[in-house]
Each structure stands twice: as structure tokens, then as C-alpha cells.
Length: 283
Picture (tube, one colour):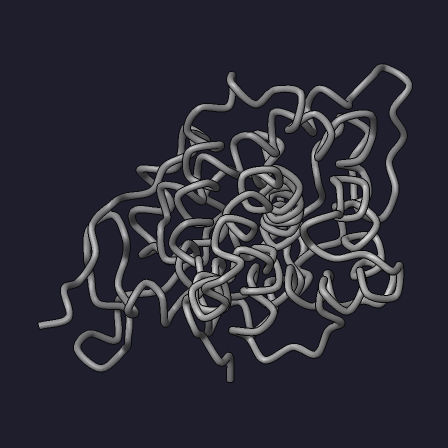
């Protein structure tokens, strides 16, 4: 079970969505994720820590780091000095607490506070500088605390965004395009990839099928046909790659959807990436 606390979860969902929908504005950052051959390290089929998890962690790590480094330190220090005779206000408004500390505290993760870190350096918040914040973040990363926070946050964001099949299509189209760019005339085949640069078909694990079946409510996402087998035994469930392998699609849970046999053979016959934005309401 995942203990979902929704601390900044929807904020990160919005960040992820904006990046994927406005990729031209983030080309350099996206290249850091999948460019220079990095994508070739993400080809292992159907990892539980999926390719989409990799992307979420990449973005959340970067944003969390920047949100802490980019605080207006001088303004916070001045506010503390201005209210030096009103310590209860300083304590309540937490001007000396970094954004990442608030997240760590909310999730109940053990960590050394920034105040304690500064005390070891014979400093106070009112006398520290941005280098101290940078070194503190490095310390959190070295201790593993930073990664714990990023990993948990990414799981919460995945819990929300995996339900958005249109966003899964956009993400997997981006990854397919990146994989296609890696293909050269000298490319060789192996257990995972063909000589033409496209991934080989692999059996879809039962845990992937169960997750996709639950998300799609046991119905074809294109025609809404019931595939549970309780209403009609003739309706056959097909687990389909949203972005086809023939279009450099990935063997990843984020790239799988539930279709009926007819839609899979007819609507997907042309090899196009296709899904729908129709969902069953809760009631």
C-alpha cells in the first residue's frame, strides 16, 4: 500500500503536465533526461520502477532542488531581524525553515535540520549564505534523505498521472521519438532491440495487466465494450501498446492500455498512437 499524503503532489502533477505539453520550452532539460544515449539505459521491459517513474524522479529532483536554492534568502533574513523582538512570529512563519525541510517533516522522514547544520558551522540563519544552502542539500543527498523524498513524491505523482492516458500517450510519443533519433546505420540488435532500432515484443507481465485492467475498469478504452467476461464471453481483452513498437514505442506500463479485439485489429491497424480521454464516472 502507498501512504499518499498529497503534499505538493498536484503541484508536481501540474509541472509534469506542463513540461510534456510544452516540450519545445524545455528541450535542454529533456535532452538531459533522454539524450546522449541515456535512453538506451531505459530499455529493460516492464520494470516496476517504470520509465515514467524515471522521468518523474528526474523532474521532481530538479524542481525540489531549485525551489530550495532559489528562496529569497536576504528577504527572509531581514524579516527575522525585523521581528527579533517577536520570536513567536518568527517561529510561526518559519522563515528559517527551508522548503525541503517542510516536505521532509510532512512525510515524517528523519533528517538533520538546516539550523542544526548551520550550528555545526558556527553560523545562524541570519548570517548564512546560498553556499550553505547548497552544501546542506548535498548533505541531504549524501545521507540518502533527499532521494527518499523524491522517490516517495514520484510514487504519489505516478498514482495520479497514470490514470491520464492522454498524458501517457504524449510521454511515450516523446520517448519513442528520442529512441528513433538514437538509431543509426551501425545499430546492432540484441535481446531487447532490433537492428532497425525498434524494441522487440515482450510478454506483458500479469501485474501490468492487472494494473491496466483496474485503471481502465475492464472496458475497451475506445468503444467502452465490457471485457470483464461477466456480461459477454465473446469479448476478448487485448493489452495494447499506446505507441506501437513499430513506431519505436516502449515495453513500459505507462504505454499499455486495454482494448477489445476488434478495436485493436481495426482502429490500431494503421500503427498510429491512439487512446481516448473517456472514463467511467464514480457514480
